[in-house]
Image (cartoon, rainbow, N blue to C red; front, side, top):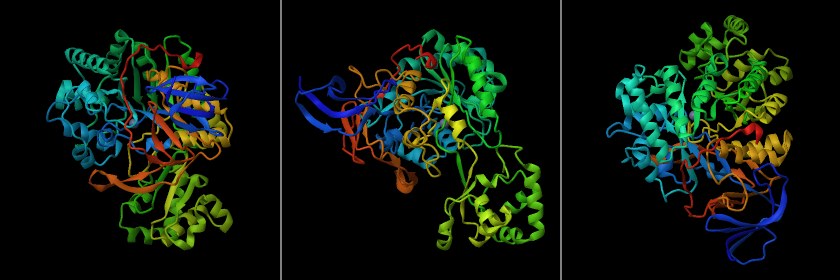
Length: 570
Ligand SMILES: [Zn+2]
């Protein structure tokens, strides 16, 4: 037996949670043909001595629906150990689409996910109508594997047109929506996505169609998957309607399918909430026919801001009027002692009232990037730390620095997913799903591509919250099984050869940098990783030492199985 590719002597962490072992992997025709002590010849041999060999990560929460059509690598996911991405999240897809309606779908994706509209309109070749045609347009053109759910907002526009933004669906329309879903799933959609975020609107300011649907409509639409006995359901649930009304549980009951939703967080503003959330999950998932998994982003929830434009102070009247004045007026108001007393009082009154506003927790406000070279030494400090050092009041420290730097200091609120004990419990919980990278979205502000590298290097290697075997399983076979990504996410004979070779001790994220490589030279933030010399997709090396090899081995991942999956008992 001659192999196309032979990976020699690596430490295999196979994605199932089984203990790591040293062996060779032989690949033929894109599949893992043999594992063991292999002597056969091969067209190419990779020496993986002292390296970990694992399945590539499966990033289930991305918004590459448009980008994938002009960027077959889905950069920068492919530079962060990801070999399969799932798009079509949060009710947003670019198919099915009626001729002439492309601008509406692009407008919703652009506005909600902060992707430049011109990039979507001019960069995407369009030309498809049905979901199947969209998938066919991608066949044989991909670097990375690409799966996609069908978005409820797109389907509702397909059936109801403009009125999809304004009203609930009639019985007849619900049937037509169900037909369109059936057709999309049969063409290869991995499932359906819904959105319940009332702040999500299209470019014209109207709500996303999925948000206008009644809950009964959602349950009926979800039940389409029951007869098909396949598919995953993703729900954007920022108001916590799962905790108040069990909407995701009811969607799982009516569909009989796994439901994953946004999200579970640990927040300094509501310190007990994550515990309540976990016990809620234990309750509903013990009901037998329910499988719900909130998504947890393993990265700290940094919210970047500058004092020339920050919006979250708007809930406090004095702050609001200052923040809505010119920069000069801001500086002069922030300089007045009398005003500062008022500002301090409002923070006190507002304290911990809302997750959207300012918490008053100066120990969670970090100086990310000072504007002046002379202040570079402050980078990474919290306002609280600086106040202690300078024996000053934190509000004075914060405003003095902002004024000194003409409101151009970059700060971040670090209020979420930063408590070690809480995060260890949430990330280890059998009913949570690690991910939520949102890759391909808000590309100018933040790129979440490196969630897997961050999770393994920070939580698993440094904080030791679980073994590497379990950590890799969380990023590979678990999302593969929930999303019906069949034959991937495990290193075993017969599996698709999606493999990363990495140096576990060296694994880390590079600093983000600006990159002007979107269509029309539009800017986005670039983030890549260190310590992954080889990323292999369907048996071909896609990325070698940080460079694309030129290969385009990716597949469209189509729904092709009726998985009944239970993460807790697997
Ligand atoms: Zn999303």
